[in-house]
Amino acid sequence: MNKVILIGNLANDPEAFTTQSGISRSTFRIAVQRRFANAQGVREADFLTVVAWRQSADFCNRYLTKGRKVAVEGSIQVRSYDAQDGSKRYVTEIIADNIEALGSRDEAQARPMDNGPTPPPAPPAGQAMNDFTEVDDDELPF
Image 1 (cartoon, one colour):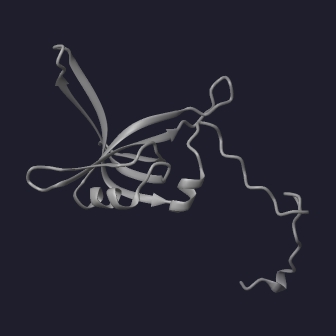
Image 2 (cartoon, one colour):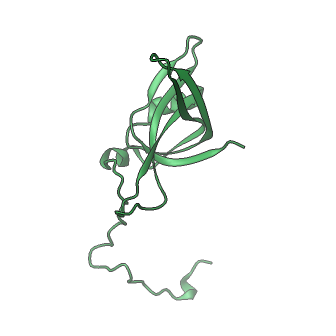
Image 3 (cartoon, one colour):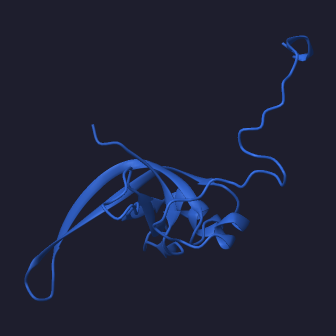
């Protein structure tokens, strides 16, 4: 079975292509943070190339931009080609079956790409994170 599910941020705007037979293709890279921090406490990211075809490509080209958070479901494909110098080169790509934009376009423009952890949201002014309001069970709607 060859199945991959990734969530990350676009590292570049999608590049739109159309084949000679009129099929849409979109290529972009996403930065996917690793699960654990390195020795310096920084969560590094892997930059993976994603290829989408047809309607998925049209969606990417229309709605996705650099920095936008996306979920990609697809498969891993490795292909090779002969370079001009005669050496054999290998390319690993994610062939997307489903792509879903996460968050809003405004969030993508406001948040710079970095490899550091995202800090938690600040509590409302004058309220500590551990302050809870007690609720009587009789007031619950269930």
